[in-house]
Image 1 (cartoon, rainbow, N blue to C red):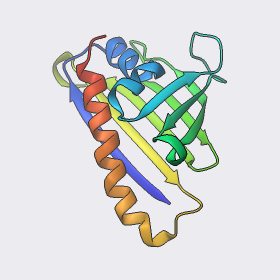
Image 2: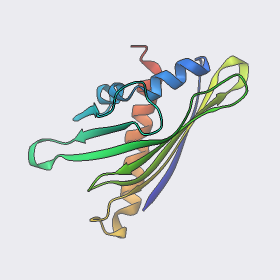
Image 3: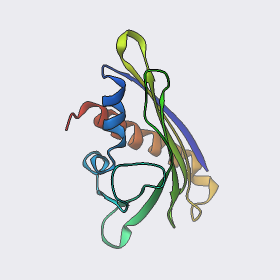
Image 4: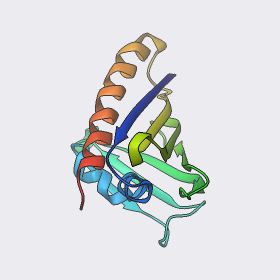
Length: 147
């Protein structure tokens, strides 16, 4: 099992930082070799299900996720989204929090727990490092891209 935390402060209003991180189809544009398919009708809410398919050919796997907490940011409260990972290969959860930061900026906190049942715990440290790198890079790109 791997746990990691990523934090960024960005020059974006709360609602824009939230939108950039929670438009699930955008994640495919920043994570190599990944397609995202939303299986439920928009808009995103508790119960939304989507699948990130990563890899190439026979080395592909589905990372099925369900939104279990959906609270967009307001003037009075930070935004919180919790995803439960329910695939065959990847289990765990992710939480995205968007809160006011200094100087009108937004503070983004991404927490994640990953479990890969077929992977021995010997690989936890390399998986943690790779996950921090891949998810940190994706987070940076999502927050930079205005599309």
